[in-house]
Length: 289
Image (cartoon, rainbow, N blue to C red):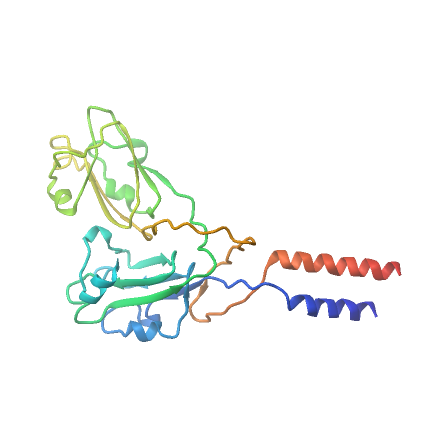
């Protein structure tokens, strides 16, 4: 008799469990990846993208890249400045806000002649997972920011992301730091202003793409290789929008799953705690009767 009561209680209680949809990881283009002459709108047609999901752009980094653009640039295949592009060959973008999102390849004619472009609509859902803690990188490690250091070797194994910081540590009066574009980086062209000179300069990586830095002291960049280029991954943060506090706490989404299943396994730990507590309570009452 007791077991029947507990079983009925379990069935009834499970019917009231709240639902939480796990975030989904979508590999853009499926097995074809991010390349030429793929109908990406057909690929996206039957998918429901939600806030917190991720897009993975997989491609040969020598032949393609990824730019997040607006509607006009998408329609006319207008490529933003190179510094805004993602170029790793395995770019992961978290869908942090609802609405339309547009992406194109910035290589010549790839967007205009080969339809290497994607537009999706992201629905509001559970909030995006909390970002990983930002990392503080001391440029050059123990050597700091000085002459005759291979900064590309220092940067090689590091994964720079939006929100991370670079710390340039050097002797004030002997070095400085300039953020430049690709041309100035290659030719060691020093800007007329905008240099950092404190000896302990901290730069927050606020946007994705290529970032170039050089020392502006004579011959330090050209003859002593005091220059650094990195690629920052991630997505530029969306403008802050006030959101009313929810009436009940919003549960945190579970870990990402792959696009193959698109399953929506729904469960909450707190609900099960209540359930187990209820079972124990009923069992206790029945044993006392």
